[in-house]
Image 1: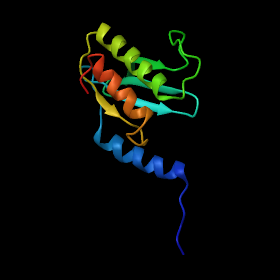
Image 2 (image 1 turned 180 degrees about the vertical axis):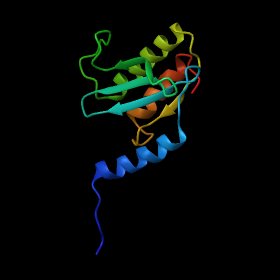
Image 3 (image 1 turned 180 degrees about the horizontal axis):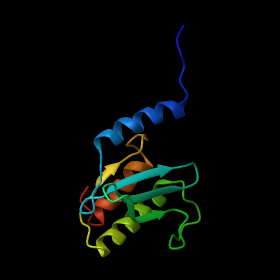
Image 4 (image 1 turned 30 degrees about the vertical axis):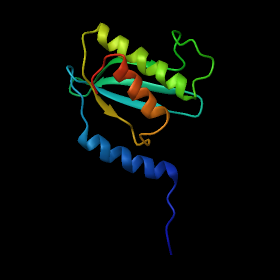
Amino acid sequence: MKVVKKRSQVRAKKKLKIRSRVTGSSERPRLSVYRTARHIYVQAIDDQGGVTLACAGSNDRDFSETYGGNIEAAKKVGAMLAARLLDKGIKEAVFDRNGFLYHGRVKALADAAREAGLKI
């Protein structure tokens, strides 16, 4: 008999595997992405110090769009985070897709951060 796993269980397993390989530092923080149906969020995390250096999301006050669950919103969030990191003097980062497929909104966020000047 085949055991069917829930989507959340599959994502949790992928997340653990990714996190075992990806770590962030103060010079090169980890960009952790989380997406829901209505919003997308990203944090720049220094894992060695245990602090969040910058964050951006589609529900921020600086976010101008009304809906945050599409690719255009993800591009704006990626550009916002890149601008915040560049203001702090951080030019490189590692990307943590957090178990989500590197496709659609997650990819658009990463591409927008690269276009804004962040090296991922």
